[in-house]
Amino acid sequence: MNHNLYAAFAAGFSRRLEQPCLILTDGRAWTYGDIERASARMANLLVRLGLRRGDRIAMQTDKSPEALVLYLASLRAGMVFLPLNPAYQAQEVEYFLNDAQPGLFVCRPQFREAALLLAAQSGVAHTLVLDENGRGSLIDLAAAQSDIFETVQSGPEELAAILYTSGTTGRSKGAMLSHRNLLSNAETLCREWRFTPADVLLHMLPIFHIHGLFVACHCTLLAGSAMLFEPRFDVRRAIEALPDATMFMGVPTYYTRLLAEPGFTRKCARGIRLFVSGSAPLLAETFTAFAQRTGQRILERYGMTEGGMYTSNPYAGDRRCGSVGPALPGVELRVVDDAGRPCGAGVPGHIQVRGENVFSGYWRMPEKTAEEFTDDGFFRTGDIGHLDKDGYLFISGRARDLIISGGLNIYPKEIEDVIDALPGVAESAVIGLPHADFGEAVTAVVIGERGAQLSADAIAAAVRERLAAFKVPKRVFIAADLPRNAMGKVQKNLLREQYAHRQAGAPAGCSKPE
Ligand code: AMP
Image (tube, rainbow, N blue to C red; front, side, top):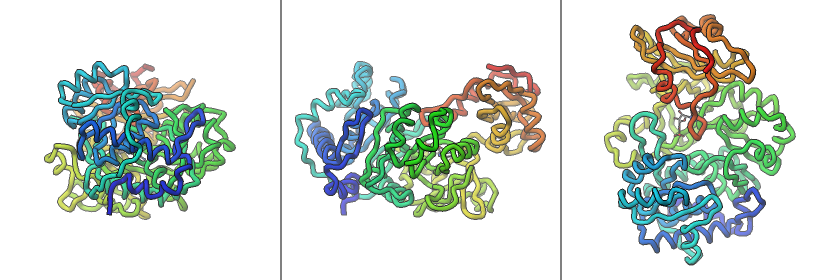
């Protein structure tokens, strides 16, 4: 049996060669037949360039159908795909090229000069260009190739992709994902979320990350559905396109932006059978406001680069606000204390997972890999959370964001929830800053709703009324916004750096708007 992920997708292609797979903003479509032929040409090119099975293909380009085709070609040829965020600067790219040693680097035209230099230093044999309109030397060379290619036979453990984690502490790590890891998760999600060939997914996520590349594209390709393939998230365009779609996937920021638009109405969302949110926590307030506006409950799920999706609220059944749902079928998930003993319902601890979807380790980091797995093969996610009595998971944050103040563990989420519920507050982030007495001092950075006059004193007082004194922020800063990465995650490491120089010992209330 061929375990190649593309072979699993292509098993259904012959029935739908004339059906649209990608529909672009201007209405042009790529049929499944087009995808099959274009990926064959590209796979032939990869082979022609002298690349071999297992070689890495690095891509740092804008989102386009051709970029997706390069991924599919890499699968077909048995190579290992390495997508990179276009926001990375030369110095960051240099690290990835040195670490992964790809045989081919595909970059944007404006980056070509720098890329050639980096490629020469890192020993990358080929550098080709792909622009946002799907043009460039990659496509010119592929055009001359045959549009027939026999997808290679892959074993289940063979690598399909390496995705670098965002690396907020220390070096960024390359998560090695096999064909089996990716296929098992895609099959599970397809089934659980009931994808069918009649579905049309509005795709506005980037494709250098698991959410847009794996979750969204794999489900579509496996089910034979179509995607409205948009270059990026644009709220006006989303409102325009939603009536033509049946599904939408987004990070929480997409949902808050949609809600900020009066043009986003119940009517506009009526044809969507499933709204999915993930990659960062969805605020309870957003979930509720969305349900009020559209009559639909967003399905929140949880996962990460190292293993795809671990939990999902149910398609049919109770989608609980604030929870990321129970473990998906085939995923074993447990919450344990510092000594590795299972925590009871309601007790927060370390989230660990095991299953076919979970990666085999970090690229060329055997020691780091060994540290992250338990003796019985569970992966330590680094996330903290608790299960309720029905097995629904609630996430409180990353272990490294845990605040230890005066020897007591404090989960930022608990304080953020209290602050977020105050009138006039749009959102907040709670961090620990070094403090001479306490070790770390609880510090809140709060963003107000437009026009709201927030008082740092009043916020601290409101927390004092609701939570134990040791959880009350020593200082509250009112700020204009929070630093986020491309997937909408608040970058607490940056916040800690930004506020580290402030005197954390002073009482709450001495801050002024930034
Ligand atoms: P990434 O590997 O970039 O996808 O990041 C994975 C991390 O994002 C997880 O370890 C969680 O900390 C966070 N994450 C993903 N989905 C959710 C969610 N629904 N709620 C809260 N955090 C999430």
